[in-house]
Amino acid sequence: MDYENWVFHDVTPIYLQLCNKMLYKILCGNLCSGESIPSIREMAKLLHINPNTVAKSYKRLKQEQLITCSRSGKFTVTQDAKHIQDKKQETVKILCCSYMSNMFELGFNKSEAVELMKSFCEHIKCHD
Image (cartoon, rainbow, N blue to C red; front, top):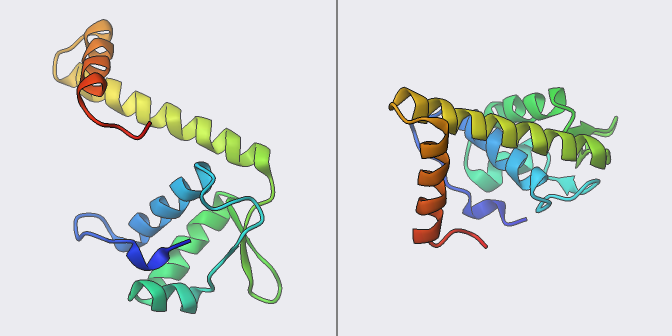
C-alpha cells in the first residue's frame, strides 16, 4: 500500500480521515484480509502525523473489528471476510441513505433523486 501519497485536509479531524481511508481500502480489497499494516509509529512517520492520531484511528478500526493487533504489537487486517463484506454493505446503506436524505431536504422526491444520480453518473467519468 502506498500510504505516503495519502493527503489530509483540515476540515475533518485527521484521525477520522485516516480511519475512513483505511476503512475504504479494507472494504474495497486494497488492504486484503490478513494483510499487515504499519505499526502506529511507522504509520505516523509515513504520513507525517502524530502517533497519537494514528493510535486513535487504529483504536476505532479495532473497535469495528476491521484490524487486529497481536501480542507482539503487529497490526493486520481482520481475516473475517464475512465481517468485511457485512461492513461494506452497511457502509453502502449509510451512503445511500445520506444521499437520499439530503435530496429530500432539497425538496426532491425519491424518483427524482434516483434519476438525478443516474443522470449525473452518465455525465461524469466515474471509476468503472
